[in-house]
Amino acid sequence: MPLYNLACREPLDEATRERVARAVTQAHCEVTGAPAEFVNVLFVHGYPLHGALTVDALGGVRKGGNRTADVVERLRLALHDAIARSAGIAPGQVSVTLIGIPSNWVMEGGRVMPEPGTESQWLAQRDAGP
Amino acid sequence: MKKVLASIQQGAVDRTLIPALEEALRAEYTVQFGPSRLLVIWCEVPRGRAYTEGRLSDVSWLMVEVADGTAQPARERAMLAMAAAFARVAGIGVERMMVTLCDSTLFAQYLAANRARIRPPARVLFTLKLLWQIVTSRHRFGHTMIGTDY
Image 1 (cartoon, chains in turn blue, red):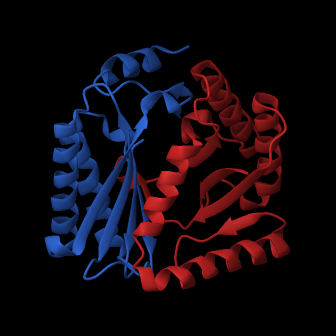
Image 2 (cartoon, one colour):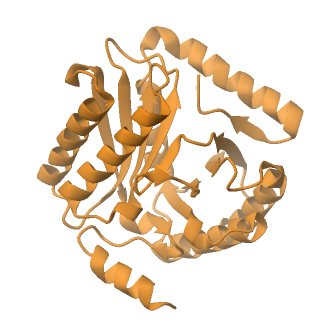
Image 3 (spheres, chains in turn orange, purple):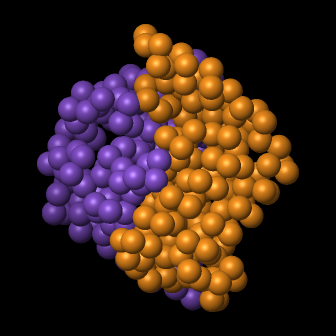
């Protein structure tokens, strides 16, 4: 978590998918401080999107902790910009929706995920072993 | 009826294991929450469509619907147990999995948000295509499978 599901009107080629995935990962980490290894991106193609949209991103992200409403909105805007730039499309062709999921409803790497803002401690405990 | 969305990455988990994986998930769900009607929907993500940490991903994703207000201890037990069961059958480490146990309300919200991305005139055809995939996959494979593309 997060898992960003990017619905694309037309298929994106491999190079574009790689660029977008990296840009989404970077944007998420820069705004939230979360480690990159948490970030998942999935591309689905052929969606009949609204209006002029080319990419419509639906993201399940951890909520709570230090994720204030302001942080979430900054994240949404940063993702919007990152997707448009990396895909080479106009901002008006991108939509981003985020759904907050309590971090303790999610397990990764065999451990319940940390509250946003406490990732360092979680990673240290994970790397220290069982 | 509760639902499980199960995504495996092509090449990371052998799709011929899906019947055994589903049996393991159903069995564990029953142990954790009692007898339940469960619809497991599988998706094999084609290579090159999923990324983790900006690199091609081999992570399996499970999104499991549970009753609203499920107590946290029960939720954590179930997450760990279902991940362990899946990993054992798939022959992967649990570190290659992301499991979410999601209240019914939020699960429905997520599905609704996915549907809302489709322009209204196309939603009927979208839904029919999805139902067609569900029906034909159950006939062909014995389990419910959908694609990533429409």
